Amino acid sequence: MKIFETFLLIGLIICALSVTFTKRMLTAIVIYMSYSLIMCVIWVILQSPDLAITEAAVGAGVTSILFFVTLKKIDGFGGDSDNEQD
Amino acid sequence: MSRIRDNYKTSPAGRFEAWYKDGYDPMDDCMDIHKPAEVSEENDVADVIAGLDLGDTVYDRTTNKALRISGHIYKILSVVLCVVMIGALIWMVQYLPPFGQPDNPVNNEVSERYIGSGIQETGAVNFVTGMILDYRAFDTFGESCVLFIATICVQILLRYDEAEKDPANVRRRQKAATDRIYEPKNDIILQKVSVILVPLLFIFGIYIILNGHLSPGGGFSGGAVIGAGLILYLCSFGYAKTERFFTVRTFRIISLAALITYCLAKSYSFYTGANHLESHIPLGTPGAILSSGLILVLNICVGSVVACTMYAFYTLFRKGDF
Image (tube, rainbow over all chains, first blue to last red; front, top):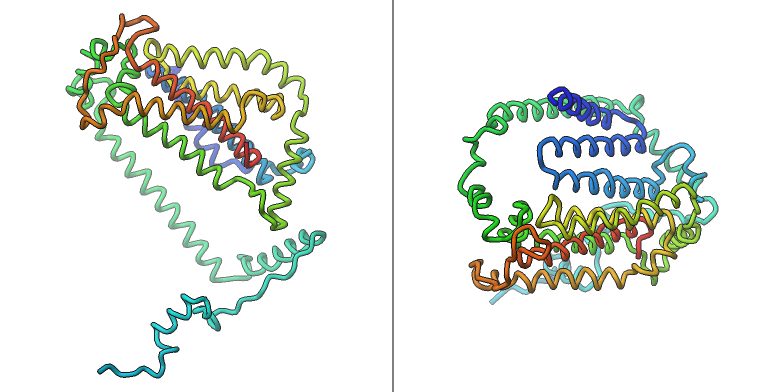
């Protein structure tokens, strides 16, 4: 269990660092989603399943979807965003 | 006898009156204001590109020396600030008590009371829900109201005004309308997956809300799950199918009904000066689904507000309207 926790925490740090160093917004959002999922598992290990459910639904689900919609609105996908429009 | 001012027009009071009566602009002759060139529909892109070229020469770091120096200072200062903040936070972490020790400051008489007599006083097996919706119900009411106000603010910021005649706004509105026409993209993978997932998500969310006082979860988590399910359904089947059961009218009715129910159910303790009067609602046997008094009702209220808010956020971000 200790090894698993350490593994998750290292993954958390890697995600947090790589979000800041990614050039593409889309990649950053996907990394943010994976950060939320790792955080969700950590909440379960810390024995707070309430927070885990909320983190999975809000952090990984709804917030990322709002980010995606905003990116589409401001044409922030980069590259072939024109073909994607319609 | 006061002196008659012959230069009233140029005195501060006279200028203020002129400004108040809309005859005088205090910024006249102070700035040179150019009217923006008339942008035609066809070559506004070219104009924008020309404007970008001008900006490139001004903000080019290879030619503008002052900008280059200030850029270096800015970078160094930001790195220093970051390192100082990280160092301060890590330094503070050393003073935190170790995790899970019995003599930590969090183990005081408040949590003792919650754990010791929470089941007798609230009837909820899940301590967290008993805390949130009974001892601290006022906080949760504030949170639900904050969600509702956030939806209203997003609507104020992002909506499209139907009476607007400005061509830019008209174009934005038309873009939103076409976004809606092309909406059902008939993505077969998305539709097949959502046919399986959406009912499961709804049932799981309802389960979390109704079992909020028995098992982990509660109004907020369950509402977020239901909202995510609604968003998935909308993504895969489009507005035409969603609006058969969820329009702006539904949103208004559900949010207002839930908030008013919550307010009426808990307002008695606010009027009695936060004294916890007896509500005379039987608490039932702890562990049964119909137990713990008002907590079940409040959970349903919070859950419906959160689900509506999540869905409203998505639609407002997507097309600026319901």
